[in-house]
Image (cartoon, rainbow, N blue to C red; front, side):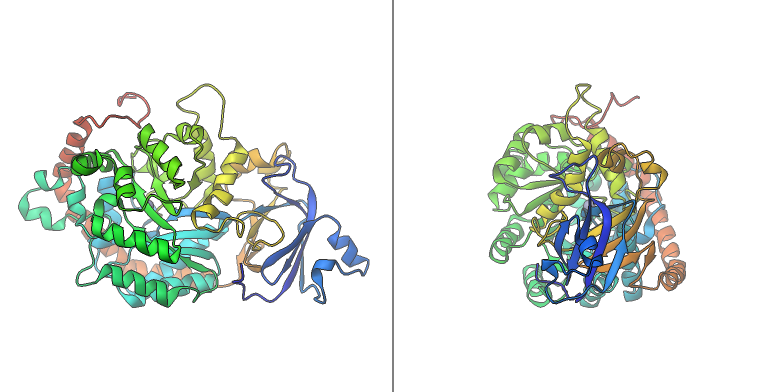
Length: 523
Ligand SMILES: [Zn+2]
């Protein structure tokens, strides 16, 4: 990856270096040599040679600028958060476990007044900081900017550049009104209140969307060294075939990954059955295939209510799924068919989703739930193992962004994206299995140092790239306005609650041909 602007040499010595293809339970102790943002070597003996006054071949004529002692520490490949949205970072802790459709109305930008550029920057930084602190070095941000504003787009990208996390950025968009894509909303909500209905994303007014997307690709591509671009249609049923066809072409010519939501909730599945019965047999996978978007560049976030035949179609096309188990539980959306995906040869990536629906950017939580939820439906032991969960959180995520072989592992020639984790923390005492203790025991407490693109972004728990205290103070100030807006939105939503719950119950009564809840609805 020739993206680094970091011109320095770092030696991380004497740590256990996690390698998915090696001993995942007791990774060997080795040294990691980082030159200009890339891993130049990962093997034992480099530090000893340097101490003897010898120069390792990989160093050439360079000298070491910084040595980090990783004795009793673990070097983990940086996690890739393959599904996330920066637009509601400041709303964490605002909601209980409400159904997805109610949460959309309560949390997402179309229901709120336009935000200030300062708020957009601050929220992007806070979200990125939380990601970094849990050992993530790459985040896929599917960001809603509503109403669209070029300055807000610039603020988001600049925030990522400044804090130093790697980002796969996609603007989230749709060209169909959100309320039309939620079953029974327009039917049960009285006409005088319908104006307050809005989905996750609303069409931009007065914007030529395909042109805007092409312009963003042209103007932003390769502008920031650690930011790559992707396309973000919010979900297939909220986009017309004409728009999706244009995206298929753009993705193909520019080799852009595509991230979309699919079959997250029962309601999203029912609307697919209702609106896509004629041409696609009620299947959004068939719809994506028809418009040319079911390709190896397609990433299907959630994929909870997926039929077995649809899973075959995804596997055949070489497309990917990105599971978000924490958000799915909190929004009462059900449990994805993890074992079926694995059985059919699909290895999911993992995401942490919104800050107000998961409500944590914490890959340790996602990995643990991924492994645990695969076990709820089958007593027979089987995959995923802890190491499989780590694969999903690293290489699996890299693959969704077309960055496999560049990030997600600590190998020579790959970008130096890693975290250094304290193995003297109680989570690792005694050290029985690094892979299992990373997935089942650790919660993020041991993450001490985070390196992205060969640059130390967090050093012994202190963020080096921004002033964290000033950011905290700014957020406190910004919340004076945002809290008032949250209350106003809640008031409008509460007034519609009886109708919205009626729509939910009607949705529940229609047979959609599968069930992704656990138990019988009364447990
Ligand atoms: Zn999402």
